[in-house]
Image (cartoon, one colour):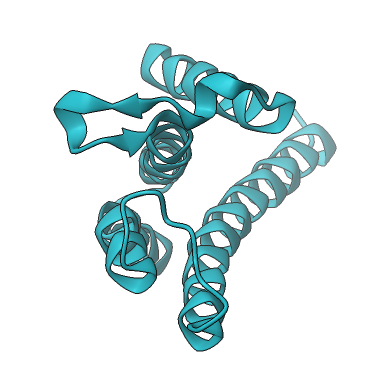
Length: 137
């Protein structure tokens, strides 16, 4: 349970900082090849949400396999982003609209898999709760 709470805290903190916006997000992290802090936070949020989905899914299920595939996609997100954009700032030029379209799709797939697993988990817990509350003692 503690692991899940820590991951939720990391995800919430990263999302808050990314949504709020700040000049700090553009700060280059020198020991990480001058990658901007905003990219690191986005990467951390994606990885944390994927690890969270691994923790909530039961092993030996298809959902767990999907979560593991999503983990691989999440781990590769930053390298793929840098390669697709051609720079560590992950800013796409107007000369490569196809690359940015692929990148948006790749990112959306990771997020949608995470949200789908979390939604599935929530619905299954709700169904389990309803069944238990309706069953006779």
